[in-house]
Length: 120
Image (cartoon, rainbow, N blue to C red; front, side, top):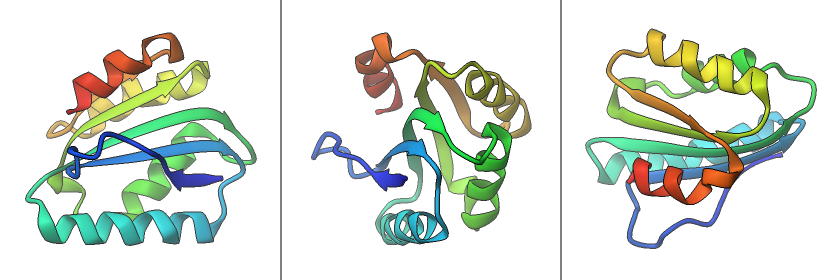
């Protein structure tokens, strides 16, 4: 499941997501709909994603799917990934190198509030 998650109501420029287990094409479609709506109202957006577990998809495949799906990737300037899954933490480090215009940071779940503050 990939879904839009609750977040601070005054942070409309942040797309908050939560991922647990397997991600379906409908999950991606739902998230992309929100992304497209927010891109109409904001010059740049930021992504906040909590990854609890991955089912049937590697971390790099997930990021590639998101990258391919979001046509205006250059309008994102920060990505905060909250996870304790080591493979995802490594993939985020690689993503930071591949997306020089976007700051990417990983946080453990014990630092969730720090991640929320950082991405704003």
